[in-house]
Amino acid sequence: MMATEVSPQRTFWPATGRRRHGLIAALVVAAVAWGGVVYAANQSVQGAKKEEGGFDGDAPTAILIEASSGSVLWEKNADEMRAPSSMMKLMTAEVVFHAIKQGDIKLTDEYHVSENAWRKGGAPSGTSTMFAAIHSKIAVDDLLHGAIIPSGNDACIVLAEGIAGDERAFADSMTKRARELGMTQSTFGNSNGLPDPANKMTVRDLAKLARYVILTYPEFYKLFGEKEFTWNKIRQQNRNPLLNSLEGADGLKTGYTKEGGYGMVGSAVQNGIRLIVVVNGLEDPDDRATEAKKMLEWGFRSFEARTLFAAEQPVGYAKVFGGDSRSVKLSSPEPIKVMVPKNGSEKLIARVVYNGPVKAPIEPGQPVGVVRVWRGTNLAVEAPVYAAEAVGRGSTMRRAIDGASELVIGMFRAGAEKL
Image (cartoon, rainbow, N blue to C red; front, side, top):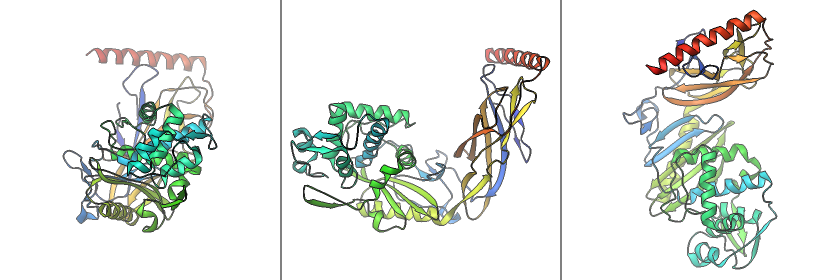
């Protein structure tokens, strides 16, 4: 992709690639308030140093993101594969939420509690359980409560067997669904996070999954904030310690296995901003709670949302093929915001990326591409951009000239690719 940095003008360059399908990028340098970002040589830790107002975390793997944009505020070994323990119940829940949304199952559907589910995840297992009675039938709604609030392993197995026939088949569907959601490394061997060599996730994937659940299923996300659940006359408290210790906390999930250590996915909202934290690999349950809370408090204290482009403000221009105008103005109907530190200053780089040139005619509001905003090598936000104006079909001469121009560019690219 060929590009150039300009300020304040926006310059567009044709990208390498096949004719009519190449990417074209616009780079905009925006100076906004930002605390200096320092990258380690292996980029295992990303964020400002503690003495510069940054975060100093003890968790072996951790990440902090802003939910609306997905912007990474701090990370440490975020792509290291580890056992996610019960945190992977988020994936189990998402598969069920998705099936409900697709109409494949209903909250009122009832599933049988098999002896396998009862022994492996129920009262005899000695693990976290909703205390489902053997050979009883339980509605999907109650099973979701049991899987999320007391972290019931039996609830997850019952859901898996009811939906897929057996737990292994359900685990395979979890891995497939993870790929559909862009989680490229996650794999699953069961439905609940009990020890299995196939259960592997990164904290980055867990944060991505938590963000997707929060934004896609607001009606189901409320389950993660419920503080207690009673089943079989046994009342259990939500295992998430943040719900009672941090203002605005409303999710998500804790986890522990000997292999993975203590971990947590947490989220909270303060002053209209939602942050998501994931930590894993700690040696003590109190440490994970302290670490997650400390990281969220630091994020809320140190960052704020800034508007990079106002709603309907021109973001850039895209090249047009065969139109009565050579370019089309691009904008977003919503403000494009990015999280920045409250102190300091540094440049952000924004690139408009699209397949082009865009063929005329073009209607106002037509999707054209995306604007991506980087802090260094870290993608801070990505938002769609649309045509802000109409572009009609050009004259026969105009279309002929554009066609000849694209032919020459295509021949040049083909020759360059052979070098």
